[in-house]
Length: 257
Ligand code: GLU
Image 1 (cartoon, rainbow, N blue to C red):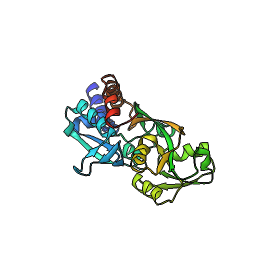
Image 2 (cartoon, helix red, strand yellow; image 1 turned 135 degrees about the horizontal axis):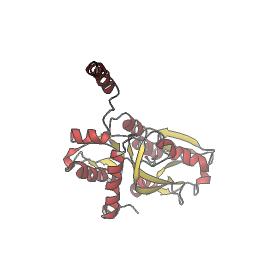
Image 3 (spheres, rainbow, N blue to C red; image 1 turned 180 degrees about the vertical axis):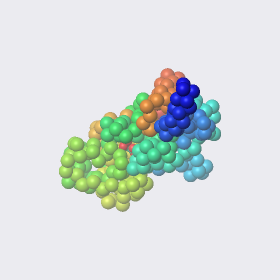
Image 4 (cartoon, rainbow, N blue to C red; image 1 turned 30 degrees about the horizontal axis):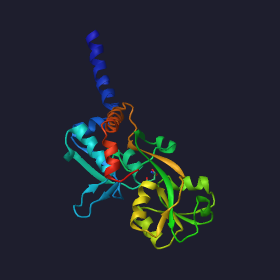
């Protein structure tokens, strides 16, 4: 009798075992495929851009990604970069198209509902650039003015919190947004100081406004995962990058701070 019962139970067990089989964690997928797929920016100097001569991905975020892959898989060659924008980076993570996003992405409570974040690896601040010749000197001078932002960034909510009466002009990429600014379509462009300083350096008829609209803590975006395996590994790597001086070195290399 015992034998019959166990024979009856076995197929049920196998069936349910199959049906409810948990999908593989991102960490296990990375190890199995021996490849790390990372979403980075390609139009945001100096964090994520394409070197025009070599055609290769470069920047602060790209260097962070390379350190992580060396640690996880033992070689820099085992990385695949996928281009993301502020508007596509969350979905790239939630869909599993990338294993992680390293793309000047700030930790926010809204984003934390959708994805997990690593510990912070860089702290930026948000401000605005305007024409030097304009009479805009403070954020409050932007009242009723046209402000350019990149869709999917924190800029819109940050400026509206301080100056509710602004007209927002949203663009999909930094390239388009900077182009619009140069063509005079808006009075100011708002994003992180890390990104604006490169623009001001190259366009000296523009200035950055003093003060900060917000603090922007950059962290790595990860798919929500109960096991927390990848988050634990990535957090440990970032803490090591902090301890061994790598983050300080990257700040110097990419002229941050
Ligand atoms: N760090 C800000 C954000 O996460 C703005 C810069 C950007 O992401 O492009 O929205």
